[in-house]
Image (cartoon, rainbow over all chains, first blue to last red; front, side):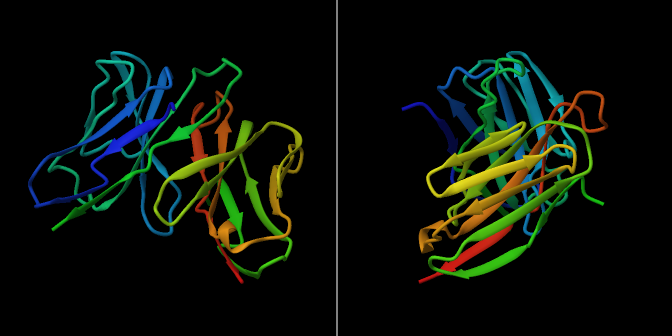
Length: 115
Length: 113
């Protein structure tokens, strides 16, 4: 079955460490997204990518970095510059705008805790 | 003020009750999504609407573009419906948020047996 796989599900990090969250999809979707979810707030967009080798900053990109070297993969690195990284991170993908599908598929999420 | 507002924030119901969750938005949109998030955190897309009404099983979603309002209804609610329900809008190009999704804060639904 097609879907999105995020790993790890839970991650603990010491302050000052960079960590990378994995997101892999086998849906042949062009667009991929990273969101952050905090209690009492709606999902906020960190980065998105509409096509391989291209990505754009979302609303809260500071302290994060991404790459899109393959269509299937969109890893997110949480750097030490991110001041409050403890959160639940969700990866999503969709077909390109205008394709008519408008299907948004989410991964199961990765919960990052900074100790 | 958030571009997408949901009400209520929390809702507790008895099994079998009819449930309504509301979503209002303040920007021009090309589509509205209703999503369901279970306690484990994974999110499932329930509906994508651009006009009218859609039905899937016990779930019904409606949208009024003129009033910038959508509702999600659950008929004959069941404890397994307990989850967070999230409204998200795809903002039209040219609006400040660009052609990306903007999410409401979610409505926590608890259905008791």
